[in-house]
Amino acid sequence: MISSDLRKRLLPVALAACGLLAGQAGAAVYVQCPGDTNGDGIPETPTPGVVCKHLAAGDGFSTMADGKVLYGFGFSDITGELPADAISKGLLAANFAAPTIELKEGEQFYLTLTNVGMVVRPDLFDPHTVHFHGFPNQAPVFDGMPEGSFGINMGSSVTYFYNITEPGTYIYHCHMEATEHMQMGMLGQIYVRPAQDGTTKTYNGKTYNKFVYNDGDGSTGYDRAYPIQLGSMDHNFHDASETVQPLPFAEMKDTYAMLNGRGYPDTVNPSSLPTPTVDGASVNNDNESQKISALITASAGEKILLRLSNLNVTNYYTVTTLGLPMRVVGGGAHIARGPGGKDLYFDTSSVTLGGGETMDVIVDTAGVAPGTYFLYTTNLNFLSNNDQDFGGMMTEIRVQ
Ligand SMILES: [Cu+2]
Image (tube, rainbow, N blue to C red; front, side, top):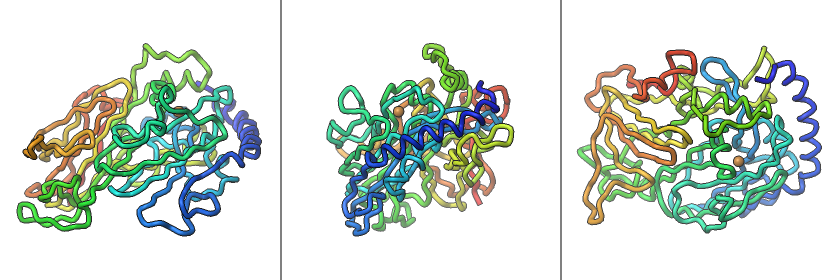
């Protein structure tokens, strides 16, 4: 573990060095977004159905629920920053989990990725990519698997383009040296709402205008949606990366199990977690990194859609909502229907997801007593924050 003293002394030097890079590379930040004239990724003349986003890929820190600060790699949202500021805004700004991206079927999505480099590990000049996992329709060149497409070098930008034709729950991650970059935290959620959204359909006597899929009958209707990503980190791997040690790939053993990048009780904090600090000093250039709460709330009688995903590189996780019925209506960004349209939805008390899997689960609170319920892993050893024996992969479902 690098000492906080050394961190404090290194940080200004590293930031100055990266500032130099930013100055030199400012011209290399190039955002392609129709109707955007100043390059900040926000169209001055918007085109209906066109969505632009600008992400930075770099490094940063996050705070585990027991207070330990872990070094990581990640993405941050720099949409709205001018090209000259993009790199400096992306330094030490990695989010864990990555910013959630919400789209609607029929949209055209321009996603610019700028590689801002690693402040803490300037010796690493790793490229980064975005892999839109499970999405069937991108051109191969935009797949983000470096073996089949390209990686984005430090100081430069590339805009990915996706024709958003398939609704569902997806995930995205960097595919460069995937085991390392994914363990280090380059993981996020992306979902596509169906064209049927905004129409009204009545199912079992209740009328909905939000649906998971184009079901035709309202059977995937819901009231509130929560994207929840299962994940975990091995603190030994992260510490070795921070201190320039050989990385223990074969010994990878995750010690912090989380939902949306947080262990319980941080999962129920409705706000961003504070910027990571060591001995009272920010180690993250005052940037917040864990912005996505995992707290689930509903009024009694509502249907809650859980967009579950797992992007973990080591473990399968089983999760349950004890006391609340779960109905699986889709998985892997497909509605659960047979070839002839037969309904394959099923009710269950738990679901198991391996790395790279997503599942759409509707929790119906009709007839449920108001109170606090839990979404948690039944891999009970992961109800922990490393040595701390109460926490980990758990959050609350508060039914009011
Ligand atoms: Cu990467």
